[in-house]
Image 1: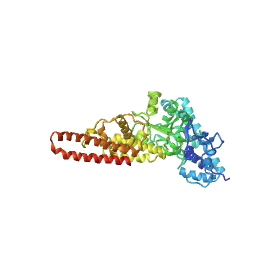
Image 2 (image 1 turned 180 degrees about the vertical axis):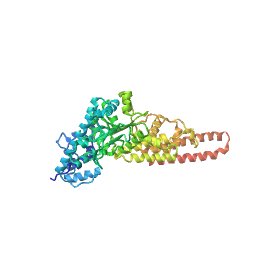
Image 3 (image 1 turned 90 degrees about the vertical axis):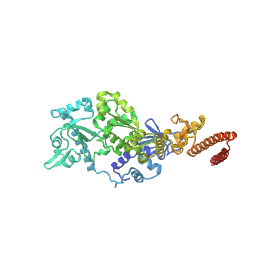
Image 4 (image 1 turned 135 degrees about the vertical axis):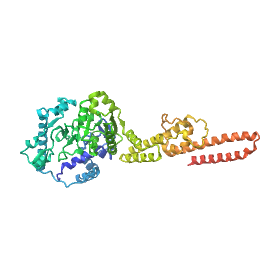
Amino acid sequence: MAKYDRNFTDELRERLSIVDIVGRKVPLVKKGQNYWGCCPFHNEKTPSFSVNEDKGFYHCFGCGEHGDIISFVMKSENVDFRTAITELSAQAGLKMPDYKPKPAEQVEKENTYFQIMESACDIYQKKLYEQDGSIALEYIKKRGFSDEMIKKYRIGYAPKNNIITNKFVNIKQDNLLATGMCRRGDFGLYDFFKDKLMFPIFNAHDKVVAFSGRSLDGSEPKYINTTDTELFHKRKTIFGFNFARDAIHRANRSIIVEGQIDAIQMQCHGFPETVAPLGTALTEDHITILCKSNRNLVFCFDGDAAGQKAAARACDIVMPFLRDTSEVKFAFVTGGKDPDEILKTSGESAMHKIIDSAIPIVDFLWNLANAGFTVSTPGGRTRAEKFLKQKIDKITDLDLRSEYEHEYDSRKFNAWHKWKKSSQKVQKIDLPQIDDITKNTIVFIVNTYPEIAERYGDFLANLNIDFESPVPEMNMDEKSAEKYVVSLKLQKYIEYLQKEKKDLTLKLLSGEENTKSKIIEIEEKILDAQQKIDTLISI
């Protein structure tokens, strides 16, 4: 069998969720940290087939079958390795490369890159506690970092001179440049990071692959990151994920904040499941990585305009990743503060309140629509409806998408289109009180099928029913619901006509002969309405 470049197969495993791949063929139910179903490789009635999303493998405790997404496609579809990865690459949106074993010189180069990054991290750590790094050390201590925190996260200081270039003078320049630690200028190589507080960036295997440097003199940009290299891709790397991975499993969620310092402070003060993108540019790759660990996400952003914009972008990105097992929420830190400042000034309890008050994505998206459009006007409502549809159309789980559509239909009816009695221009009919069974049925229909309620709003508004009361559980499809409303409307209309006929009959008996023709006209209307009811029942 030919050898294949593991970089590509690893990327397939990173991009694709094994729960999604297996779930297309095996109904899965989440229990604890794993998903369970009946094994597709042998007959069984009691589920013994386990799928671990974070580790990316499946295992059957009945027949012993074990593997990852590639082996599952090979075995379940009876195809060879290349066919399996071709199918998976199409699902992942990746182009199939020409497979070749990784050259020995490439392996050697990568090892050299890791050695350079590790050594640079050691140098920066030592410099932080030397005279050169006194300002940086004072700054990080004022931000509430203890020596233990500094040591754990290997925070350091890049001095003003070319310490990395000079340290690796005997290393091939191309190798040094390939790490992103140095640049080439008119007079040779020079350090990319100078006079910066240094935060090492780790891959999932705890190896240093890049750095994020913070300015200490107030200059902008506040943070600069290593440019993309063979070891580091900003859009695929999550700051703090190597520290948070186990905590994400224990907490059954991820918390995403905006910056490195916020992430570290959260991890060290009661929220070890916290991570941050490198900068504010959250990407689909970031969400893919997090969802493989856990699909419950809490985005915690500043409450200012920039934070709201970042939250809206996160909402847009996460929509295709939603599942019926997902719980995605949004929390906001207000008052011009960030999580770091909240923890320092108000403590963990205040931060817990902020996280606990996070609103579900269904409410956040609804709030965006209401805040972004003038829903008091027909045009504004139309644009808001288009906005919501555009977002929920991104949900790939069709059943979940249907639930979102139904939820928003109900909200649009109750919040945007619900009738106001004071604005009714049609003639009101004084209808008798309705019984509890009818009332409960109408409450169910209005809350379950808001589009029906909108069509017959003028009639329903006159029934004096509290539509905010608890919705009873009933088994009635949309067609039957509409037939019920139309039938009730006709019945009430007949009752109204019968009352009018009775009044006219009394007038006729008292000698008012001109009422006779009106009585005949009403009788015709009653007959016509009754025929409509009979026709409706027969449909």
